[in-house]
Length: 268
Image: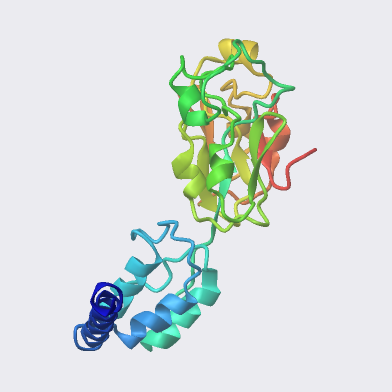
């Protein structure tokens, strides 16, 4: 009785204790020592792992900062100046201001401005729909409206409103994840202080654009004529606004006959 039941239990218990002891010793003597600076930096990073800093995630950025002199401390856009100051304090270097950016959607083709030309019944994602004849809408450049950008935003800063993605500029941290997710490359990261942008991505000729979207850019160049700094330019039938020279006067927005040029806060 003892040899058939109790002895195997004792052997297993002894093996378990031995394995536990070996693991404890391994954890103590084979542990990889971390740089205290890494732990301090990692603690102040927001943990978004968005890649806006140019590294694979917060751990990779913290490791680079702790181990490589000269790495910029202001690369964490979601963390902003607060995070940059904290990192600078840990490393004992001068504070560097973060260039805040926010997302802007280069499409104003909502359900009131354009229509769908087909009923799409595949996977309900923008990336899937985009592979089917470039989407379901009249305009092949338009927002597909399934919200792939919404799914990746960790800050509740972007939503599908009336068929098109709309950014809440107050909530946007500039992480850029929505921009990388959009299959039509409609979401652009621009300096947060710049509130005027072109809500269109179509390079089609104006006559065709008028047929497919009431809010599309028709390349009329009226924005060029009224811009006091030369920030507004029309190239290949599509207007663009240089954020470096734009002074947010909104003259181009007022002159635009289709409403393709927009500004924050967006008009209801």
